[in-house]
Amino acid sequence: MSELERRSIDNDLAFHCAPTLLGVKCANLISFDRNEHTMAEYLREFTEKMSVSGLCAVQLCKCRERTLVYIYNEKMLSAWLGMPQVRDLLSEYGYTADMSIREKLDLLASRMSCGSFPHEIGAFLGYPVGDIRGFISNSGKNCLLCGYWKVYENADKARQTFKTYDRCRAILFDRLKSGLDLFQAVGGNI
Image (cartoon, rainbow, N blue to C red):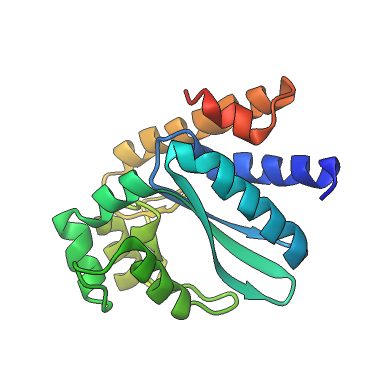
């Protein structure tokens, strides 16, 4: 993989996954249009260098020229998925409390198809359960606020969260502009 390709992927990840990379959010999802070999090489490097930080990357699905990658903080995700209201929501979709994170991600991946996401994906991205249920019951319409997700409850809290996510993105881009690669930039957290 060329240095230009690596920098481009670093920038894409910084833009779409900064809150997770900086330890503020349990997970993010990003779609790449890179070739399979380049993505496989980058994800191997990501796993090797970021595992110390508890960060993981898995390919959830691939269709045509797009690869959907899920970046997550294993401890944060485990704690989030273990919360009673999240666990209850996921149980409605066949996820059981005794499943490992990897088993849950495998089930999620099996339910995905090109351009189509199962409703429970919001739980895997750390979205508030009330907003996930609101999205489902309103078919994605009538939200109070639209930002990193569609908000159906507690718009003020969501606005604050969106500002925090924007701050993470700005911090990470500043670090990349200073010449650091993504792995070095994330090492400092916020």
